[in-house]
Image 1 (cartoon, rainbow, N blue to C red):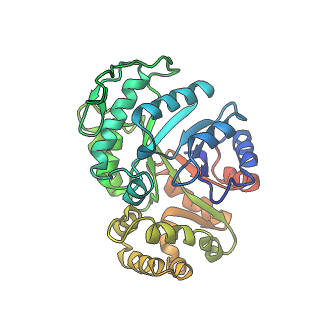
Image 2 (image 1 turned 120 degrees about the vertical axis):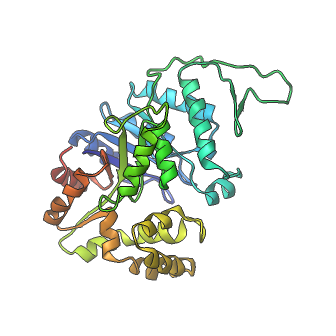
Length: 341
């Protein structure tokens, strides 16, 4: 299992220690680093900025949101990044959720799987330098109507790699199966190595579909994992609980929260309902306190170093090929000592 550095996305401003973390990850042999976007900082700009100080580590997006850019614009950015990095770029894509897509981007969220499938097909067309011709339900190139002067265009930029890797973010079984079918990797979130049977089944279904690009042997599974090293297990878990409460309780509307559903599938339906109820009532501290330790331990590594080292066996045996972690240089070195990169 490889290690990757999760840069995440910014809060009110850029984190002060990102450059030091990136330098440490490069020095310690981390395999990759990943930047994200939500509705603030974008994924590509920080990745290019901090990536310019590296020479070896792979650079990935986790994720670029589909609604933020047309498929062609994303293809242009991916090809440009691959040139600037000497073939080290990984394009991670995700549909996001209806609150962001419709509220922030002002676009329809309906049928995200079909939209994603078309988006990826256009991306591969662009990156191969085929003419931009596509007639789908969601995307049409050239544009139909208008002046009538649009014509199929081929990229002037030649790719470093015509098969530039594309990973898909997915949480539900149908999305995971599609990632196995049409992508080169899966960006997992809140993956539990202790309850992953449905993920294994979904991936197997995708790999078995006609025309699937990959097999289980050459498919990448990248997952962000919170690692908190502390002699006090509960204190370590307390540093993870607010994030879980945010995603379970606030990242999505009631009845339409994919993160909630992930934990519910693990058997925490009652706990999720309580967390969500408290969070939506504005009681965020109480919502975090309602996240039980056993829920934290399903998706995170918390506690003394020896405990974490023991629990890593389950992750080594899991589907995850790259574990994404975050922290300052000191923390990244401690994690590298537990999970040799």
